[in-house]
Amino acid sequence: MGRTVPTFTMVIHEHESRWSKFRAALRKEDQELLDDLFRAPKIHLAACAYAVNPIPFENIVISMLLEERKRSASLQKRVEELERRLAAPEGKHAEK
Image: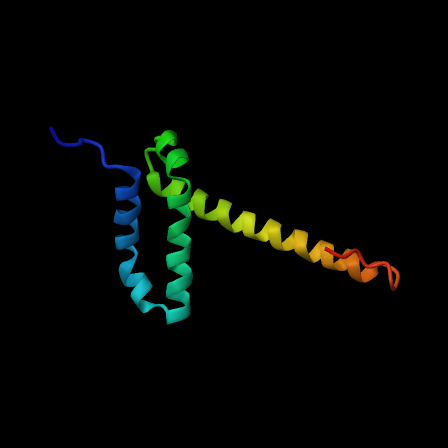
């Protein structure tokens, strides 16, 4: 007996293929960024499948946003650490 509901991996691939003409129109470096965005929901497969959203693309986009937010927060933390180190008096830089 076959599956009646596609796996979320199949849903991701389906949406990714829907964007293939858009992707083809992008510059090479932008194509790579789009590919990177579509890797994000694969990290959150369990959450996306568990959510059972009637519009699965919303889960895909939220996963993309979540991964971008994580990157942004990580970069912000690094900037704050560098700013703290630069503001420290000479000779008192924290070494890692």
